[in-house]
Length: 111
Length: 137
Image (cartoon, rainbow over all chains, first blue to last red; front, side, top):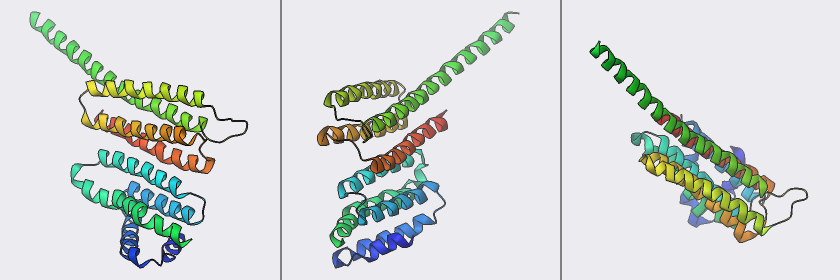
């Protein structure tokens, strides 16, 4: 998704470059994952990052939506077989965690 | 003849127990489906709209009503000793607590665009809990 790449490329803060690269890598994997939930999770996160950067969402609203999505991801993991849960978590919960902890503050700072 | 009666009795008992088991599952599913309808309606009720004015009492009444519904569902789930079902309802209840506490703290309606995204994610969360019920049935 070009729009979210523009948002991420707009972050120049050196201290979050590693987190940015990790997020981009996980998003790329999630977009092509066979599981529908992982793909939807990535699409929503990308949409909200763009809305945050454009001022359509406040940081508090962004964090609340991530919190909501995290709960949905936990519910989804609850329906998965135990064996697949670790990988499922990488592509959902870890992506959300990086976005809310590292990326959102940097996006706000770059506006 | 006595043996025939025993077989009939066993079959009837099996059918009765089977019916009880599926009724229990249906009740859990119905409880989650009813919570979904009520929770989404609660978000709608406290989203900005024409002619709406903030009313603390209305929020308190609506919150207490849905809290009661969640408490009943959690209590029913606890009696069935199914950790996944209890976790699913607890997850949904925690969302409701978050939404009601946000409204109480801000004393302001949700913005429509934000509420639409919130409802989209929340609705899917309920659908996953319902899917969990279907898997267990």
